[in-house]
Image 1 (cartoon, rainbow, N blue to C red):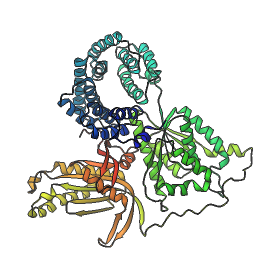
Image 2 (tube, helix red, strand yellow):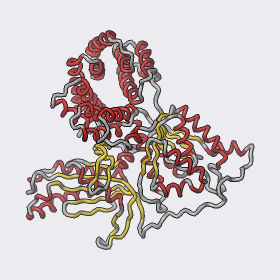
Image 3 (cartoon, one colour):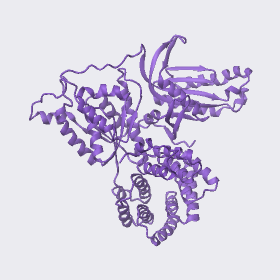
Image 4 (cartoon, rainbow, N blue to C red):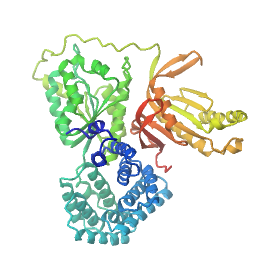
Length: 618
């Protein structure tokens, strides 16, 4: 069966039926691919504007993707227009509940906790539905109102006992009711019954597990519930390629492949691996992909640059059989993501960027399913691309599992002599292409534009320089995070940073500074605002003969610039590279998915995210 992503790529939203579009979005949602589900609903809404069910699915996708504030805004609009059915009210309450959990402000926590409770109770009172009823009981418990939680819980239990439901949600809701009422043994039995249902979906299990653990913690019985739920393994993999011909210090010679494959199979079984994230070089990458596909698992592949260059750098030298395995695997995986579609040009840092982006996507899927992902490193423990990722992952995430190729090699060589290599006897020459007379570097890029500038009077321009541009200069100086490059043109700003964390911090500081200004006090119109866009990618550093200093050029500069015009005033929009890189090891920042958006000047369609500070409700 083709993956949901591949089915979606072959689907024309304008000719597909509403029923088929809803089914496809729901399938993506059930698989935990919330961003895809949201994109499907947006295309479907272009054809079916105002469709309530599609808007509900979109809101559910935003909530699962960790974007509750955007979901609240959409759902409150629906409620204001009279859509007060149980599903809409329940989703609104769920989004408010997530905001409460994510906020670090006690006042905001209380506000959104009470909002969640109010909407759950409203839905229960209007419909008598167990979905909003059980969540109202849970919210009472979370807010320290045990007596009220028990009262609502008993009402829900009476409704459930009068029903003859035999599906996943009936069993899961019964289990939750007994857990709230303190009947732990019956709750465990019913949770196990729900998990065993043939219609159970990964995203449903993730939602149930999260709520059950929260309730168990509130009831003081967390250890008992932790062992009940199977945790779907989300696994990022990195490791060695097959040794180049003539390599003297063996690392992954071809003859240890069967032993490596056995070790990978065993590790995937132990991790209950259901979702895989990996590149696709010959050796450990492709063996991991094949093993995951054999488990009917979902696999996402990340390539560091153009496909033809990747074949040259990472497959051709090992022989045509590996290229054939690559082609076969690419036809079966769920998605192939190009970290940059440009050429390799001998810039090895692109391999590290690819690993970092793949790690970020892995963490984002873990957040969607409420699971801490694992890194499976097929690696000899020495410094290198795999070692860099392993060290970073172990420090930031912790779940590191190593298959030590040096131990496998030692075990094999103790009893056997190295076989004659089946690889070519000489290493083929890889032409990386012609690198322009420039330094290639990975940089964080910011573009900003002042909205309302074009409406200024001519005599306002000196005031603009003395207030806005001077203020930006002072903000740079105060930040202590000097950009590698900055430039202005009228109301336009361009910044280049070496570190993504410094770039995001400055972008948010600039947004906040702009929002605080009283422009009328400077003699300027009050409507001035700012749009800020961000992207991370490889660019070319070269002396700019006009400016007389190093400037930055390339297609990734253009992409950062193209995101700015679609950004809402007062917001910071970013590419998925930024979101992925922020997901591992960058505290203090968060993001919400905006959707796949068409960039100006026919630049293409790209996933876009809204950046904000962690724990802050914007």
